[in-house]
Amino acid sequence: MPARDVEARFNALNAFLIEHQGLWKPRPFTHLHLPWETVHPALAQWLRQRSLAEAEASHNTPHELPAPAPFPQLAEHAQRLSAVDKLPARALETARHRLNVDVPGRKWQQIEAFGAALQFAQPPTHWLDWCAGKGHLGRRLLQPGQQLTCLEYDPALIAAGQALSDHHGLPVTHRLQDVMADVALNPEHTPVALHACGDLHVRLLQLASAAGCKRLALAPCCYNRINADSYQPLSGAGRASHLQLSIEDLGLPLSETVTAGNRVRQQRDTSMARRLGFDRLQRELRGCDDYLPTPSLPANWLDKPFADYCRELASLKGLSTGAQDWATLEAHGWRRLAEVRNLELVRGLFRRPLEMWLVLDRALFLSEQGYKVEIGSFCDATLTPRNIMVLAERD
Ligand SMILES: C[S@@+](CC[C@H](N)C(=O)[O-])C[C@H]1O[C@@H](n2cnc3c(N)ncnc32)[C@H](O)[C@@H]1O
Image (tube, rainbow, N blue to C red; front, side, top):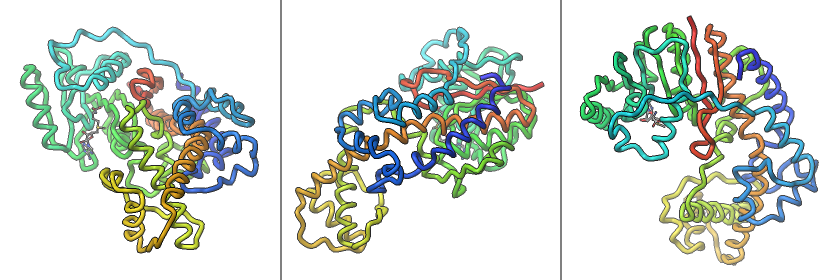
């Protein structure tokens, strides 16, 4: 996206997200009835009668759903506002022999795509792999005559990364560094961050621009992993916006998933259906029609009979269950799950617009710091849903 379009796009997204926040902020999982259902009863009813399998099939492509108004109109608007071009890809230098050993296949493809989309007017001299893990990205980018420093705070990853760099005979410095602490950056560094979470990549933008780095690139992820209670906008336009984003709201862009395997899906569904069955029970037991947050539970809780699951969860919350019709409650949980997952498709329309709003807030911040900024996708969403890249360069 050309720089001049960024602010206009941000403002349009901002207006769209604010106007429709009643549709995407309330979570069907915690609300038995969503406030928007009285405004759009035909849409609500249409979604509520669909099956769990139908919801699953539409999860990553909600905009294709032939649902009643205003769904198609919203879908079209959302897609238009969040469209980004794929960044032009250059042919990467051939990777050194066996450089991808120890890198999961999908991660390696992401690294290759990230590297191919990295284009700067001036070639970098010193790569800085930010939250590098074992430094696979940095090593893939490193060319003769360049330096590479990998910053990471997990000693085991530092050791494993150093061993890999030594094995390949590459002059890489793997530095044990908490990037939230003081980090010495200099103008010659070209930071790259592939999938650094919330605060970690925001920290990079702030430090790199203050240190005079001439170029940097990042693919953000986990916008909800922040220390603050709510989103702290970075750019002037972001700060001027009336859009308030809670940590829960910031999780919305992450709800798109690369298709999970059958076993994982079955486990996730069972866990959610049980929680929804328990939700019905706790509302009755407490005589209070509100969702009751429950702690995350070890996976082996799913092996317990449903009655034991509920009894033990209830006792964790200081409730006593008494005799219940467990089979009916359990079936109710599964029915609710189908409704929840279908109603979620409305929120799904806003995943990408919200992500674009967050990315553009970062891009506008970098523009304010004097960078020329490019935004685009660096790979297909099937490889990773976090496929947006921000490239920034300044004199
Ligand atoms: C999602 S992983 C991304 C790793 C790598 N860039 C990749 O794409 O495979 C995030 C990495 O950040 C590291 N990390 C988390 N918090 C950190 C901090 N405060 N300082 C430095 N590294 C951190 C984690 O240990 C992890 O290796």
